[in-house]
Image 1 (cartoon, protein in one colour):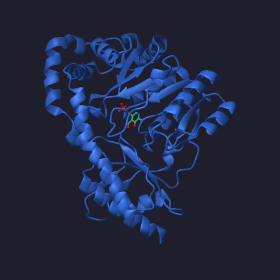
Image 2 (tube, rainbow, N blue to C red; image 1 turned 30 degrees about the vertical axis):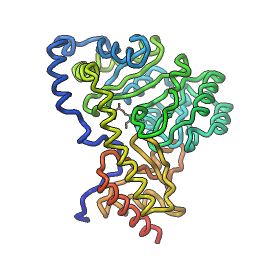
Image 3 (cartoon, rainbow, N blue to C red; image 1 turned 90 degrees about the vertical axis):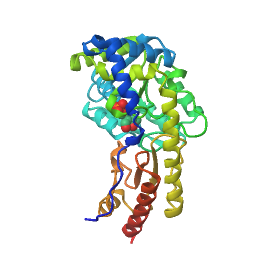
Length: 363
Ligand SMILES: Cc1ncc(COP(=O)(O)O)c(C=O)c1O
């Protein structure tokens, strides 16, 4: 085994140095003083009321349209438990977030992947799939998609919303990276276009830290109430203390400067990844996102990600499986590169090792 420093292009984790530890410590003390019993006691499964009220005001909705959970991923699990029967169809982009695909599979749904392009799902493929089968929902990550880095264009968003109305299916919009835009202008959320058809999810995992386990869903009050009932039957109430700390931190106005801090930290890491790829792997044709945590490349013809992964491990370069992101096969040459938790020198070294590994695998 190599004694090189390990470099992980595996999961999309935030940088340790991004966590606002001192402000979180202050917010913890403050919320214990202001809402001590409130954050220590059980409460409604929809979430800690002051946190839901703050989220509602921030998002321009009513508190009844906000459900909080222990991270956003578990809300997907609860939604499936409420909505999905074995054999129901769920559409995802292909590729899509591997953990979400895993949840859909565990509910014995037929997971149908709609090919993803650099500007969102292929609409012809979506319409063809809809003519065969209408899904319970289409799980879509329109902003800086995990794993590809793609962002859905405004025109495609409008068409996807139209199709959801025409065929009568829900859109599950997952947007944890949306606020991490390093350049360019944002497209409207699907939720803003059709609040009656969309369940919108986001999370403080990428904005504060995974440790606060604070995710939320926006949608109609009745649906959220049904999901909250599953949550209540599972964990009674979500982590009120962590959500109280998150609430207090947000109430103090610390979110906007934190987002600016993250952009300053992560934007150069995206640029460093693209520059290193252009230099060491000029044929890699990476996606060129304007934000988020990921970009992706397609390895050269005849080179499989699985083989590169095995060979890269000998150089202490750890890579993720490409195929797990594709619900119906494919992805043999797909490689996701999460860059946020690596410093620019680590990124350059990692891409150098990747380029050497690909060359070696090709020979
Ligand atoms: C698209 C997407 N959704 C959800 C999550 C999970 O977020 P949380 O930590 O809020 O459960 C992630 C984490 O990587 C993600 O990439």
